[in-house]
Amino acid sequence: MATLTFFGKLADVMGRERSLALPQAVSTAGALKDYLCAQDSVFAEVSAQSALRIAVNDVLADDAVAIRDEDEIAFMPPFSGG
Image 1: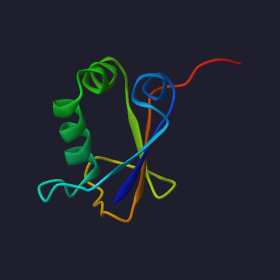
Image 2: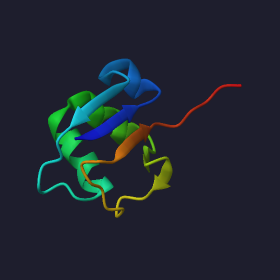
Image 3: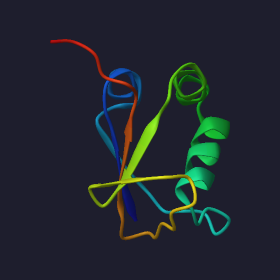
């Protein structure tokens, strides 16, 4: 199972961490983001309102990066503060 970690506003509504068995059709970071948007309206809203960043195994990734069930995938909305 992939480990999904959420930061910022997403952590407030989705929880800090979840495990997910990736569906067969989900093989890239972008496909996972689309899958989560379809599954959860709050995730979709936050994703649509901000430049959501994704990290795969602690490395920032673009939507085309391949993912596997063993990966740690983090979703990070923009941070602000001082």
